[in-house]
Amino acid sequence: MPQTITAPVHHELLIKKSRFIACVQPMADRAGAQQVVASLRAAHPAAAHVCWALLAGGHSAAVDDGEPSGTAGRPMLDVLRHQDLEGVLATVVRYFGGVKLGAGGLVRAYTDSVAQALLGAGKVAIVRHATLRCAAPYAFEGMIRRELEAAGATLLDVTHGDDVVFAFSLPEAAAPGFALGLNDAGHGRIRWPRIEET
Image (cartoon, rainbow, N blue to C red; front, side):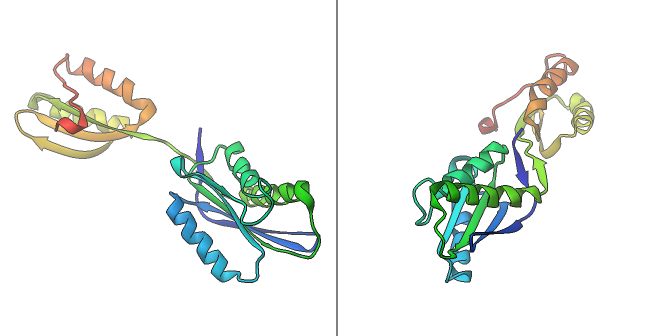
């Protein structure tokens, strides 16, 4: 099950006189990640590289920022993927210490920097929610409200017209079973209009 982290965590490594300052933090999209990277560049003007990796749905990225291709951003991204994370930005600011590490050494340094930062991160499971809408005769309103509460659903909206229409959200995994149970309790008189129909 995918997870995200609850708060930013920093970690610093010193490898052959080079400083690797890592940070992992929650991040929703690429635009936010680019703002963080820009602020890191401003805060560390003497740094040789500000490398970063983002896993956030369709907004994923791996940036080497002048390190040899594939030695920084991709290894950082691989650490995030290996830990099944989502909505996470990893950044590493490198101050060059005068000793070249070679491609293998760089991969290890960037991988370790992010992995060590993640050791201190609080993680929470990402529970995807489905938004559903049902319509029922007024006689079923009380029953539906009780079922929604028992299922831990979040009631988003109730409208009263020819029928009572409920909009609610609940974890995706629970949605099919909940709908079947509600259909049984409503004796086939509950309708499930698509969201865009109402």
